[in-house]
Length: 203
Image (cartoon, rainbow, N blue to C red):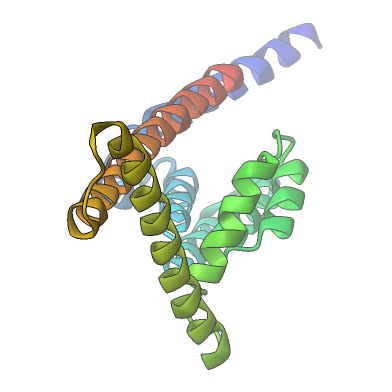
């Protein structure tokens, strides 16, 4: 009995190691994978979901479920639920699906960002009103950010004798662009660290 349990544990560890190795491969390499086809297709589905491509993610997971062994299908379906909730910008469903996977749910800030993304860029197939709302919200967001940048540049320039409107607008736009670039950079670094930590915990 102990020997069998040890074999099961070694088999699970080997599968985890193989999954981690698959995550390092390119999309083309994953498409050509045959030995761990279900896992490879699940990774492709998750990557498509991160690009908010719900149609591609759904197709990858359909193929992954078909290729999975019976005992693996429930887990693949749960991964599909979480990935599709992300791709379709459904924060409440994403939180529930991630918890069903036994993983830590996204933070409230991450869910808020996903909700905002859903407003600015509605999923394909959304109604005309939602698309119009997204365009209007995007315009208001840009105007708001430019106004904040304009205000900051104007305040900083006051001790130096002030600044005219046109240069303040240009300077404000540059400030906003730099701030967004820094946020994106830090966001990607944090995402990479989170993935590394998740991989280490699975190992």
